[in-house]
Each structure stands twice: as C-alpha cells, then as structure tokens.
Image (cartoon, rainbow over all chains, first blue to last red; front, side, top):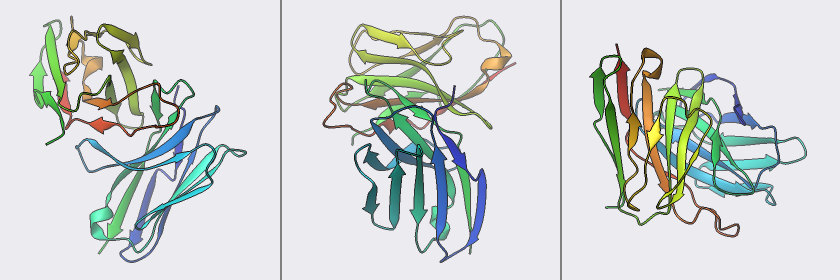
Length: 111
Length: 117
C-alpha cells in the first residue's frame, strides 16, 4: 500500500508565487525525501529530511516535517516556469532498504 | 558521468512474448530497485536488491523476475507479459542501503515505456 499521500493532486499558480505541497504518511519513518519528475522522465532527488529534523532548506525549497502528525510539506518560493513538474514524497523505513513513494502532486506554473 | 541507464526506452510487444529490460549503473551502488509508474498510483516498487545475489520482492512483484549477478546490472524480466503490465518502468540505485547515519538519495534511470498488446 502507498505510504505517502500528496495533497493537492494538482496545483496551478502564477509565476513568482509560492507553491506548497503536502505529504502525509502512515507509519514511523527514518527519513522523508522529495523528488521532482518532469513529464515522462526519471525522478530527480530534491531534498531529504531526517526524522529528528523539523525543517530544512535548499535554495528556493523549504521542507518541514511533523512526525507527530505524520506529515511533511514542500514549499517552493518565487516559482518559475521551469518548476512545472510532478513532485513526489518518499519515505524511508528504519531498515533503510526501501523507499515508498506517494502518488504525487502535479504542479503547473503559469507564465 | 554518473548515471543509471535503461534499455530499451520504448517497447511494444505482444502478450506472452518474454522480454528483458536492462538496467546498469556506473556508481558502484549496492542497492538497486525497479519501480513501475501508473497514472493515479504513483511509483510502486517491484523488486529490489541489496547487493549481488541478494534480491527481494517489493510491493508488486507478480509477473516479474530479476537477477543480480553483477553489481552494476539489475535486469527486469517479464516471462509472459500481459496487458496489465503496460506501464512506465524505472530502475534506481543508491549506495549502502543499511547505513542509518548516512541516508542517500536514489538515482533514477530515464524510464522504459512498455506497451503489451
């Protein structure tokens, strides 16, 4: 079964605005990762946050993790047309042998 | 250049005709994995391998086989493909699967779009 569920399923915003996507999961995790996928292409790793971290930044990306609520959010600030893609969260378990992916959020940036 | 390669990128085949999708990585990664991606279902893991000669089932292994005879290669075998295996397939790799203090991101191949008629 899917561990991560992203919300919303699709999001359209104007270029320059901030985009926020959420991910909820069901079981305890060791880490949570966010990936980006351009249409029909492979996934590209964006950022990883460990279970003992609450917030992490990388360039225009900000990720938060709330283990009590079993949820994470990805914020993309000052969005650009090139940010148009699908975004997936993935959770790593304590054995670290498996990443379980959510169903993704389709983000469209309108120029 | 560090990368994961898959071949073929596109394949149309008929029900029951055995096929193999190859996957190779040049990063000396121990962990390799196969996923399928279907609309509305996200990525689902088919099989994974912790190291040479060590493979295990993921969430949707039925109808698939894998082998890991060499560290760099992890082929996906469909012995008797069926239309419900029409999907976009991704191979991925990452180093040291059991290091709790140094979790690494996965590197994905470009994908193989398979159509079974």
